[in-house]
Image (cartoon, rainbow, N blue to C red; front, side, top):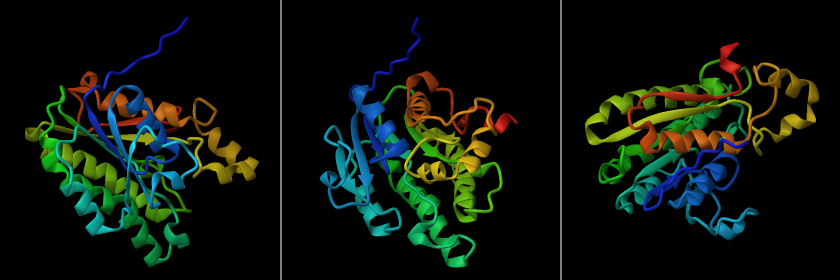
Length: 249
């Protein structure tokens, strides 16, 4: 017995920041399989610099702290149907996020770049004719809801991105642009890979969820595609947790 869900994004354009690995790559791949024309961003100079196959996407080099590069990318957009703000990382430049400079760098990378790109892309999103309206999906985190003593800057940035999601949803409602967020739980990606070296820490985190396992990038991608589809045309300003029930406990 199967109960799989398929989306049709033929004729749709999507921009996925940080789409070269992990959740971003799964999101971009999901859109591409569904027929969308997908552009992904990454920090390396060209797509061939990555180990994964990016041939199904258009590639754009982008550092999310480079304001002029963000402005240039947004300025080159014609019409855009879907924007997924996924790019981000903790410990930017290896800095301690309890240090004010490290904290500031985390905010710059994880929320300020996304805010700048989204606002600069407003014209292109407003030009979308996609049924259900253009869609912005911000990838936040469980750290937006619960404290962390390891990456306070990342946590603060994700909290701010969640707040920005709600404010933009209201501010842009008359533009036909929906803005939502997806909050992944513990997902098996390159960013969480170091936890495998600490079995007790990993087990402790896994057991905080009702479903005691790590999630997959594809499970997060499914939520992003849903929020970008006509099926969610009455949904804006919301946050969908893909966390195995972590927040329910």
